[in-house]
Image (cartoon, rainbow, N blue to C red):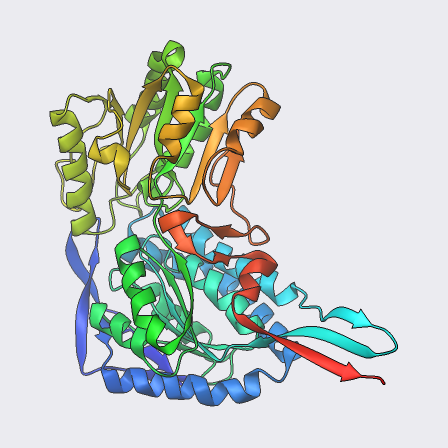
Length: 468
């Protein structure tokens, strides 16, 4: 075992206790990670607070440091990718690209302008609006894209002049611990601190008196607890929470022409993507063709250990999620749905589940109404388009959605009716660092990415200079 350490004040820090990190391809503990104490969290917060006083003063140095951090990620992407595959399960090529993508996000923010806004310039006054850093940011990241989603937070937070204490998911702490190690010589001590631990550590962070901002990505239930914990201290929060993203196929769509994109958008990262397609609404006249096109791709998919050649999909990341997906699929089958492909766990060690396409599921079935976050996709028939839109919107979720059709203008008109943060036309999961990402309703508070995400890590300050 490699012996991973936390990063506090620019130094490698061990912990008295450790916890096991399971390789989801085997179901066995592959590594151990340090289990931070409350005192070590205090030390990380103190280091971040101390470092912030100097870090906030030199924008040029911050940009140079972010560029250097991106270069480190590019140079070490294969090494980091192997760690991501070990702890998360995704194929090695995808994991390496996640590390590269994290570098791309940091590079984007290194080059993003933060202009001063002049709102008045006349004989009486010069009034400017400037953005100031909040202070220390507590960043809490999930297990599906442990490094990429850390970069979504680190890039804007650090550019704005904040310092960060980062806590990864206990299922996938290793890549973030390695990130902290890799950047110790790039960022000044205390600018990025990385601590690892379980749910108690997350609760300590959100209630800690030092951070002025909590940036959290995870489940709706945990997001609500984060918001409640932050409220007494009036901490700012950005919450990127769950999604149950619909894809509506119009009656002029060619199922064969869109099947590859639609399947990829539903099953990317084994369906473990907040904004992946979670349910497909298809017109009755095309329903059988849509189901078969998706099922054919599911039956052909190569599932296995992410380190094996040619594997497209790895295991589900952890046992609780594996059991949840198994339960939701079994419930749908018991309720009358049919598995056009897949439908059961794979008979092998680890948390492998067959890529599953379900026909005959209806609204009201748990796998349609809830977020499955795994390799199981229900396809639901509809007769009336207005009804399909209403059913797509009839949920507490509102992260993203998509509309697919031969007439792009018509599809765009329908997409505008979806109640979600991102509404795609003839594509899905088209994410980029310059494009804001956030959700309506229970899917989140605030946005990430682009200048809008950057603004979430700042306070506005008005500089008013009288001239007369």
